[in-house]
Length: 228
Image (cartoon, rainbow, N blue to C red; front, side, top):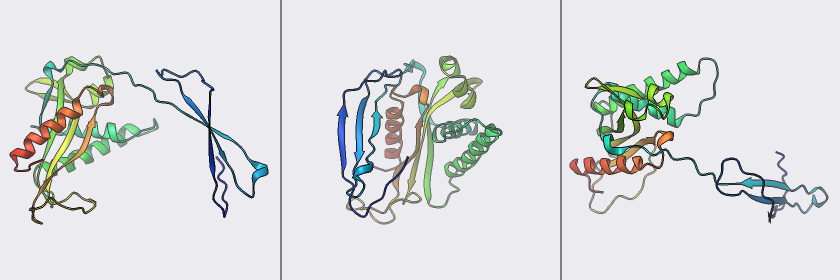
């Protein structure tokens, strides 16, 4: 893409076209917008640029919620599975030599940091808990081999999979937080409740898992003395 610069503003004209290319697995037709950049000094060299925008509806996999558990992590094995889900969600990997070793490195680093926060070993955090949404492996084994292999943990002799996770943090502020106004009547030493590392397995979006995780975090935060 070539970018033209000019000392004068570049007005943009948007011309909606009726062209309707065949969409790929999309329920809605794409909209074609012709964008023409016009420079006062380059009018003889105008080149229209066509931009296609479309919204594709991802297929939703409905899950059986009868065996869904949303609770604090109770073992290091479960914390490790949560760390693996976060790496799987927050990073976009391209297949290359050694990529699996790199994934394991990132997951191990997140696991160690999470373990320190939950154990109260991180300065600035008064209390941290990891809240996970989990299902028995038998319930989702047919959905994704990668998810079941990567985010699996054992609980009382039964294999489970972490399919959603977040951290509930009670602290004065989170690292890199932009300073804002606190509610009236709250002192400078009041530890507020924050959510971080919120994610749900991409295969199971739109099943209410994020809502369930946040609802659980509110209950625990209220037990800690934080009123949402």
